[in-house]
Image (cartoon, rainbow, N blue to C red; front, side, top):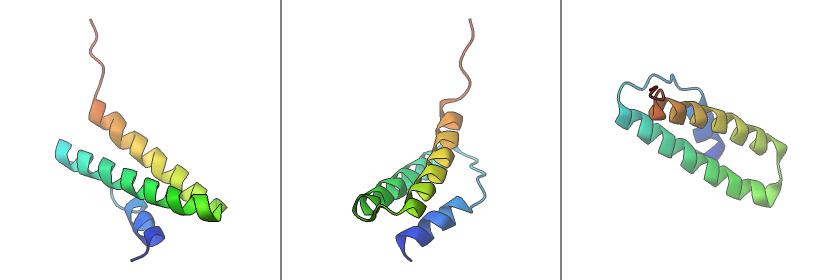
Length: 74
């Protein structure tokens, strides 16, 4: 499976992470994908790769926002 196929497969998954460890694993996986795509992007400057990285970054931000939880109020 190529890098782009793995990224698109991750992007099309159902994001229903029941446990915190599931969220952590998903966050790490998407971070690794983004970094790998970035390495390829540096060489090719393909706009499609940049768009894919942006979409994955949005997913990563949603996962991390869920990991941090609601802020406590005084």
